[in-house]
Length: 593
Ligand code: F6R
Image (cartoon, rainbow, N blue to C red; front, top):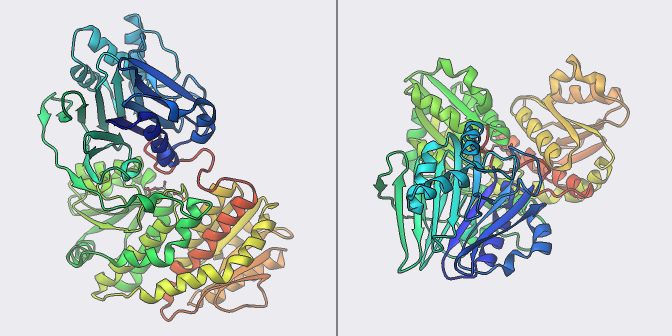
């Protein structure tokens, strides 16, 4: 996790880095810091614990001068949340500064070796070895770029890092291995960041670094960039791509939180999940049908969408998908062969657990397809075929619109596998109704949830993954314990936890699951539960009814049911005074294992 950004150009660096940190804050928000080359030749570090705004109010990132700098917003892995552990980290003399995202697995050996050479460490982080390794190279007389490439060659693990040196005030070096890094190429200016959002206002031209690659950027005597394979040290050529997202898509606009904005966009954005290349969609569906074993690997919310995808594929195309949690895939990976297909599903396209699955699948000779949001992400680039979510940048840590669009893409695919097309025009209207009809009730319910410790979400069939998703959303942003489960399983144990007033959200669409699911709700009600029924008609057994629009094809209910659950999580978090965009202990892009 963690977000990093570097800038080399003509604009005041403090302002650029500050706004870049704000844009990257969704990746981590334990602490933040900045290093700039000040007065042309000295590295100045400003860093502390807390969120970017809190730190900025005392340390004033904006006021930092100069035209070269690097910055970091942290999600702690090695070393607690303390000021010394915040990035940037520096070499002994303070001449080299580094910000790092990832985990250096051999940092203990490197520390020992560097200590024996007289280096002293100021933090408990794995990252701090990097500036010291670069310093060693400089001491040995290497130029800055070679010293950085030499340091890369000694690192094991995942990293994306940026380095500055006071002896080379108009240069910036960056390298990547298993953590994302993108170079933004402007007119007489460069950006390097964990994603493109911080530089969309300035340039849409970007170069995506691959694992094992580094870039050297120089501003003096003309702007220049050179790319290297850091294992061989050889210079390589890279293509410049055009980014399609706009800066305004990644702004909150009139909304108080990104999460609410991203939910309210859904009626419109969902329809974009249907904007697919016909040929890729057909080939993708054919690849799924032809595969001897079709695995789907995903984490968290993307896993829940994949479970719905499995239900649709079974129903529409009689094809069994093996949906596996990416972090557990190692247990299944021995059944991989060259006849297998692995479909990676990921909003960010950077989740480390998902990338591990892809690497295992490649090693076994399996085909790799993916469903991702971020074009050019690592998952995208490692895949033979990709279907994009087309939901625009998702900034709120809790996945909302990307979940809906994952459902959209799975729905298109399952229909394509059946040889049919599906039209989403009407669904957009139903999503809008789902948002409008229940808002006031949900705000009231959130006031009640404020005082609740446990909530249960029940669903059957394709509504079961939606129950899992409703519970995950509530947990992660409101910190209320919640459990999603197949409605029929309640009586096999969990019913013991139901007491007077326990809220039970019952997904009760008018499909073949209706009566059984309702009976499961009634069993809970008999033990004192408050039943919040989510369905198209009110029922005497519901204590509160969340109304769904009636739709012709019951297959689509999982899409519509999701809407009130996302809003419920959002209003509950707000009611409890939590920041839904930045839940504690979490970050949006999970690039650690
Ligand atoms: C929950 C959430 C996470 C992600 C998970 C996978 O709201 O956002 O559970 O779904 O970390 O992330 P991606 O889809 O980027 O691979």
